[in-house]
Image 1 (cartoon, rainbow, N blue to C red):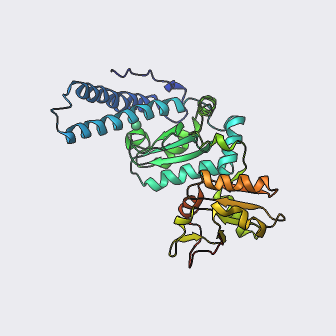
Image 2: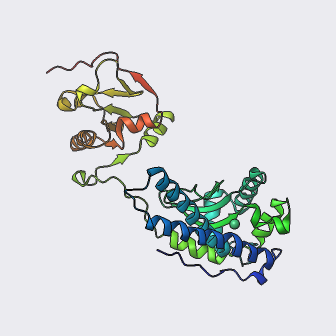
Image 3: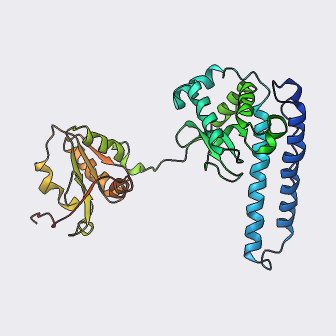
Length: 325
Ligand SMILES: [Fe+2]
């Protein structure tokens, strides 16, 4: 496969405080070099006999290919980020930045802080849309290979010295200010609109439980912290709850196989949350049975291990709860 060169997106003569000479040099020498080396490495990878080539050689070439492809893509985004009147984002982008950063000035201040923190070192600052959370965040990288998995950068600031040194010398912050003056916000908005079409990773589905209400462990912990009444029932199978095992603080263990024996101890005046080991069947079944009996019951997603993964408070089970059979 051959990667084709992208024409320079920005019209260099329209820029305010960034010269055509700087853009031409950047495009020709740095973008061009990344692209031509990317093609050379890709060609080499396509030619090698994988079965006869030492694994470390293949690994090195793949890492180089990743680095060069990212450099190519980021430079194309960088040139496409410039060429507008950077003073004010579009209405849509202003609203989204305000939602995710507090206000546009706070976003700008964060970008400047990230640029200052580089202290002259190379890196990228990327305004990135993360489909998992449906939000924007600034990502700062110190090479071409760090990025957010699944994230879609919609604005790129190149903080490599080659991006500013011939014009701004050792003053990267003046360069950042010039970059800000030239952001093409309508183009950023167009990329944002494309990015938000990307679906988040599919959530765990348990169609067998229909529309059984669920609650996230973070929300359960918040309910407990705020003192809201809650009956938290650990319904892991009995063999998970032997002496010395741990249990979520605030929860009581009840045998899911003997629900009819303990259902009478619950109150219908306060919500009930059940959970099992991972949040699959048993917690759901218990919640479904309790709902059928008229309780305001939900199951906790992710179960015992999600609670632990969140570093929720735990206690040891001192003895097996007694139930009569
Ligand atoms: Fe660059």
